[in-house]
Image (cartoon, rainbow, N blue to C red):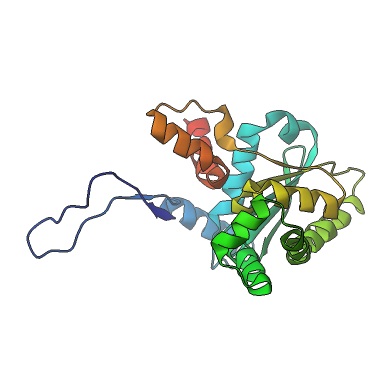
Length: 233
């Protein structure tokens, strides 16, 4: 995974006539770990074509951020990505279920913009001001994810004597108080945000600290990968 590192200084060209250089942060799994995982799957008479970092990192991040829930309760995580969302169901340190849904923040905004005729910026503004028509449109659009979450919880609770009492959300959609309220109403249980960075001390300038706080809900996958490395050391 990679992302452009913003900087106040303009990008510099290495030599006249060459393309501009930009700085990126890049994260991934070491090749030997991928090889070990592939070998284990092969020995189990299975094949592996894709190794997803997000579910494992989210699971690690939640253990780091909310150890009391991770160790003693059943929990349900939903991380809203740009085009897809990751759902994880765990219980007392056990990873029970992982699902990826073709629904993300971009899908939601596109649907609401189409229904209302507004721009994406207009959609976000209307949600912030709790426009009644936009809220109802959002309720319809979110029914897809609500149905998937509800069916996964029903599957789990129907086979185990444990109950999911709340849902933990992260990602872009989770930043909207209006959308959190809609999901809580549709799922008939509390939905709350969580951030793996909440237990971290940010050692940066004031502007960078504000930026990190505002993007905290987007960083759980990265924090989960870092937490695993720190724990291993």
